[in-house]
Image (cartoon, rainbow, N blue to C red; front, side, top):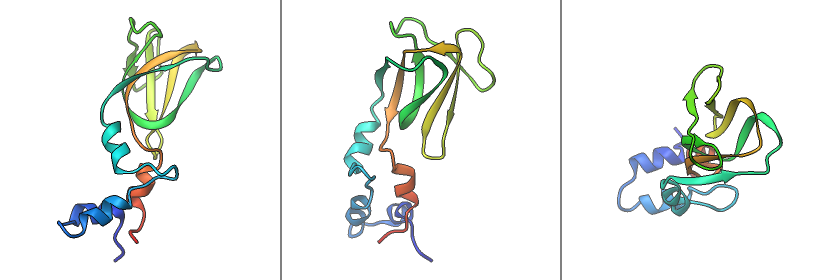
Length: 128
C-alpha cells in the first residue's frame, strides 16, 4: 500500500519526520512554516469586491468571525439561508470558504486561520 504524506506524518519517527515535513509543500512553495504561521487567527479586511451576496475567499482557512468593515457588527454564522445580519459559510474540499450574505456586499472582515492553498491536496498526495 502506498503511503500518503499524511500517513508518513502519522507514522513517522525521529529518522523519517523531516522527510515527511519536507514534502508538505503547495504549488506556491509554502510548507510546514506556512502551516504553523497560519494557525494564528488574524483579521483580514476584504474590500473593493464586486457587489454580490456570494463572496469566495481567496485562500483556504477556517473562519471564526465575519464582521462589517468597521469591525463593530458581527454577522451570525448560519447553516441555512441567511437573513438580515447573518452569513452562511461553506467550505470546498480544499478548505476555501464561500460566504453567502442576505444581500449584496462589497466589503467585510474575517477572523480566520489562513492555510496554504494546497494543504489538503498535499496531505493526500502519495509520498515520494
